[in-house]
Image 1 (tube, rainbow, N blue to C red):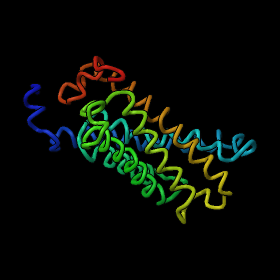
Image 2: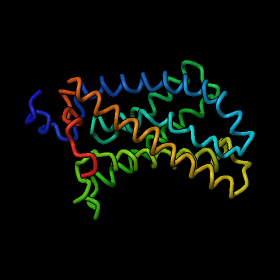
Image 3: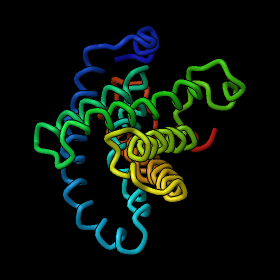
Length: 216
């Protein structure tokens, strides 16, 4: 697809966008499931030292949201990919039950809001990040997903950490935010650049991701 054709579609979703977003989400569902299995093992020593530290491994559950938006670059991509990925995990048999759907929706929303404010919004950040899916945007989107994850786990009725003391809840939220930025944000940005180099993103605006500036 030519550059002109890609630009003409603007924010409208094409069939190829839906197909690729679904593939990202399905792959994300497998990652979610595998991450959940591994998290049970890794979290044991963390819980023994300081339970809120488990927030540091939460970022793996937010990868589809950031990766989906970095590749598709259309409004709604983060929520779509994260929610469908959570649905996939539930179908495969999640130890967290149906709450994964709520988690997926909220984490996708956290990333989506950041992308909206920084990339599409008419704010003072516009001149710095408008229509730029750089490393900073990816890190902040991952952090946004992590923030919503931490809030969900700590304050909503079904949250796993609802019984934590206020200080521990704050620590958990901070750890989730950091994890989201590093694992979901940075790794998704690196993955997008790697995929762009192979040429598989030729139909997307992200096809030039490998040569886009890192910070500006």
